[in-house]
Length: 280
Image (cartoon, rainbow, N blue to C red; front, top):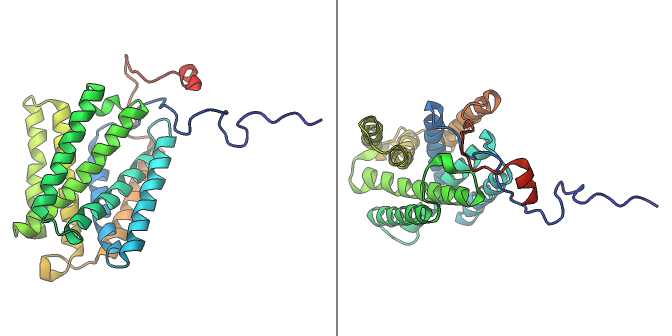
């Protein structure tokens, strides 16, 4: 008689074990200069990719954006510690999806950019409020549980959608054009850095800068890709998206190989140990 197969041998999981398990370490990277470089690349790439997909079938474009998001969510939430490839793939997927959702509200439902900017600002504020009420902290160093990670990525989505609307608002509604918008947000993003040096709460400074990276990256992408007639360099959405994706692959590969950005374990971390995690 053949021995009974061990539970979970085929699936790699024990029977009854959740598909998305609790993290074993922090699930987001340490904040370094490279973090901001990759963050702006993801915002620029997401803007260009979403705009390119919108040129064809709206149904096909929406399916691609949704598919990228689902793959990114499953990949990231299946990991149990920060992994550069999984983290930045999901950030890029949210950049693409968030741009598509924000643009749809304007193009398909006729909501002006001022309206979509206000809407996403309210959504973001609500997420921050609910996250803080639930966890009593908004620190990225606290992303050591599935629930906190869920709040984190909900916040990321809202920042991407808000940044898309805000960048379009300054470039078109206010008539600044794309290059002037790039300069504007490049100046604005220095505010939290200076304020942090003078005592601004580091968590508030981080999220201030994080929100601004979105309209900055989106404005850069639009300036490079859009036609001369609307103040762009006319490189094209497709080519801009490919160039940025190539840059992202190179930089994220570097992060993965060098293991740059992994948060150090700190005393008092609430990350479950292996024995505890095995019981969840």
